[in-house]
Amino acid sequence: MTADVAWRLVVLGRVQGVGFRWWTVDTAERLGLRGWVRNRRDGSVEIQAIGPRDRVEALALACESGPGAARVSAVERFPAEDDGARGFEHRGIV
Image (cartoon, rainbow, N blue to C red; front, side):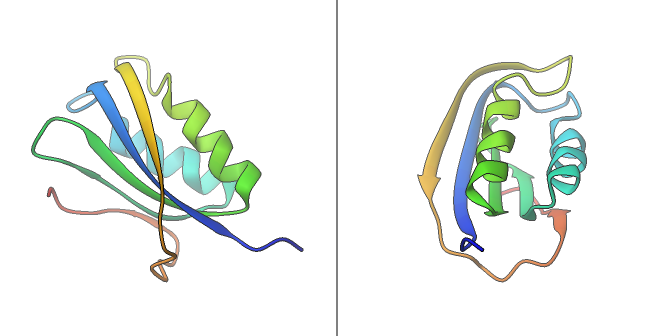
């Protein structure tokens, strides 16, 4: 069994007000990931994704399109630390 990885994703474009956070929770739960998603004041969406590397990668790739009304211009990826999240949840704006 491989160790879980943790990535921080920042999704840029028209990604707020289009259901992106709810879509992310649904997608992450289907992939069996832990973590969270939140809007940022700069208009982006930030995601902490924790799980097997291939499933975290699958979420990052899915975020390049997002839900139908989103217009994603970029998905930035950063290594992160496993913060002990259980399940996948919405968090407040930052």
